[in-house]
Image (cartoon, rainbow, N blue to C red):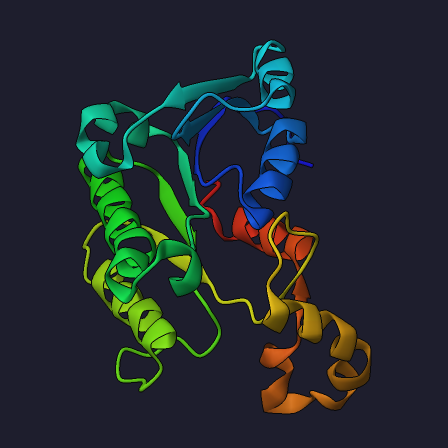
Length: 212
C-alpha cells in the first residue's frame, strides 16, 4: 500500500462486477483520502454505511448529462467501470450509448478538468475494424480516447471475467466451468485470453494510474 498522499478518486460504475471490488480496494488504500462515486439512483444501505465513514462521497447523477457534474472530473484518478450487454441494453444503439458514449464523454471531461489520469475497462481483442460489434465498439472507443491529447489514459483489456454476478450470463457461466481445463492450455500469445478474476482487473486498474 502507498503512504497517504491525499489523492481523490472518481469512480463511474461502482455497482458493477468490477466496480464493487474496485470500490473496496479504493476505500482501503491510504493513497486516497476521498472516493467520489457517480451513481444513477440512491444506493443500497451498504453504500450508505460506507459513506458515513467520511471517505466515500456518493453523487446521484444523470449519465445523459455528465457535463452537469463536470467539476468531479477534476479528481486525481478517474476509474470507469461502465459496461452492459446488448441483451440487457435492448439494442445495439443502447449498448453503444453506455459502452462508448458515456465513457468517451467521461474521458473528455477528464481532460477538460485536468484529471491526473484516466483508466477504463475495454476488452481483449478490441479492434475498430472487427466484424464483431462488441469488439468493434470497444476498439473504436480505444482509438477515440487515444486521440484525446494531454490525457494520461489507459485501458484494461480483460478476457472473460470471473466473479459472481446478480444476473445470469450463460456465456460467462460456461467460461467459469471450462476455465480450469482451458486456462493451462493458453500459453504464449494465447495467455491474454485466459479468464481473469474481477479483483485482478480492479488491481490492474489501480496500477495503471499515474501516481507521481
